[in-house]
View 1: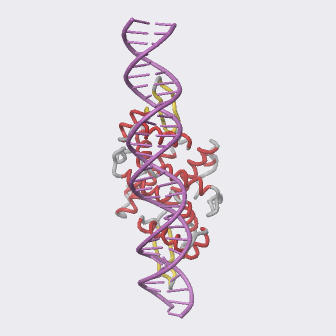
View 2 (view 1 turned 60 degrees about the horizontal axis):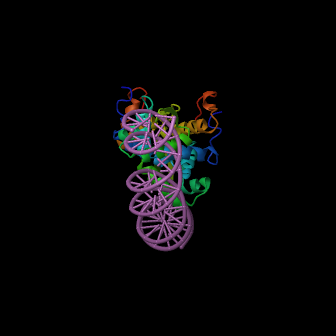
View 3 (view 1 turned 180 degrees about the vertical axis):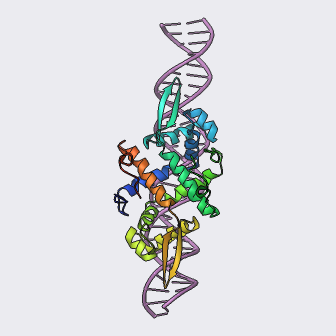
Length: 116
Length: 116
DNA sequence: TTCATATCTGCATCCATACGCATATTATTG
DNA sequence: CAATAATATGCGTATGGATGCAGATATGAA
């Protein structure tokens, strides 16, 4: 079963690219980080990440279609939360790779698994 | 130590975005998959991923700057190889997220860790 | 209740920017 | 010279963000 479904011509390549494209934006990464500790409304997220509510809403719409976040109505507000732990894990792994790219002193090889 | 270095305003956000941007391209993902089993030359990679050698060379230049791949001269050819295991891990995690997004039947929760 | 207003969220449009690719050229190695 | 790889330029496309507007909901007044 080891790496059997991931050839260079695999259909999963396109899917992985979509996931990476979804995360290749600072605002969306900040949204993920902001949602680590629990659900938040659009307005609060906008203030946290430093963008307009409309812009954040558009990002959340994309992330909702990608099943990265899910919503819950709360009066006039809509609470957003992460739908699973994969986004967090991806961000953590990206940090690991970035540390390699920077100094070559990978902190994640000295400490235990960070929780991103 | 849990999530201490990853606030929404962390410098690492920009770094993570660069890593994700690097992986948000089907050709580069295919290059990573092609390099799983060992080093390859630019021409061979080009034929494997179905792009021109010039295009592949440009992708490899970016990946080299990001310390994702490293090179070794072999006559007129230049052999490329993955510099660490993080790229593979990221691709694997992206597949996991994509599986969630698709059907909601996460195969990685039933089988053991795939090796991307 | 009914109406008006304010707030919050979502959607369409426009613009500037960045990216991937093809082509052509140059460099390096044998 | 031959082969391989790296680079420069131009083109077409995609994307993020701002702006403006529309829909939904809660609050308050009459």
